[in-house]
Length: 319
Image 1 (cartoon, rainbow, N blue to C red):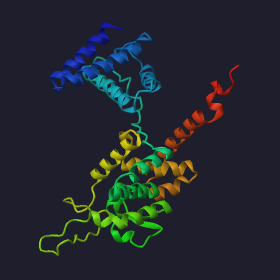
Image 2 (image 1 turned 135 degrees about the vertical axis):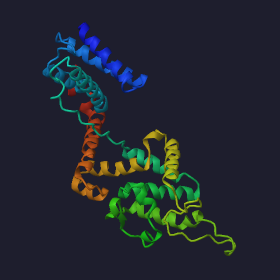
Image 3 (image 1 turned 180 degrees about the horizontal axis):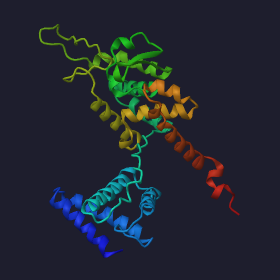
């Protein structure tokens, strides 16, 4: 690596510290990013002061090949781009070799997914809870898993939506758009069992009301808390407790993960992506398409671990 390249990096970092008041951690990150670029360029006998556009482009392609996250690749690219803008401003180079490099896309993380067996264990743990508490949590899990409801949609359900044992719900989702959410037999049975114990969770009657009577509530899941209905935070806590009881990593379980499980298991079962888009209430099919990656990875894992051929080296018998 050339002395000139190192000097330019030092000058750039000094400018960032003095003129832009960059924090120590920020300067350290810039320094590491530029050193990483210099190490790659050195393989071709170049440095930041004389690197060509093709070599800089190859560097960013190498970041992807190393398996770095899109966020890290984007940060390193930004460091190099800012460095070359500084160099151009100083008149040290007449071109910017990083200009033609396309920005890496910030990919979306794949959602966590519960296996079917884990869903069963979670339900079993919920059922084991005492009385009304267990029936309520079982109802919550069954409803989300059967219909793919968002937690906000679930907690906004009025009692009237399920009072007559419907085969589907009319849900008002994001943007006030309504959609149909199906209910399977297990979910409907869980709702019936819970409704018999629902009065347990009704708020206490206000002062002056008849003694021993609970206040009425329009919500399917009322609460004696300040909001008058169950909160998303409380549901998350209940699910975490059930996960621990079921021997499942609690960080893997949440209302949103149950919604993901609904979509992924449908896709694995052969459901059309457009149907899943409608059931989830996604405005854009691109949002739904992430489940194709999740399901694909899961199916590949199942084949590798469960199929007899997957237990052999390279799919061949050992001799």
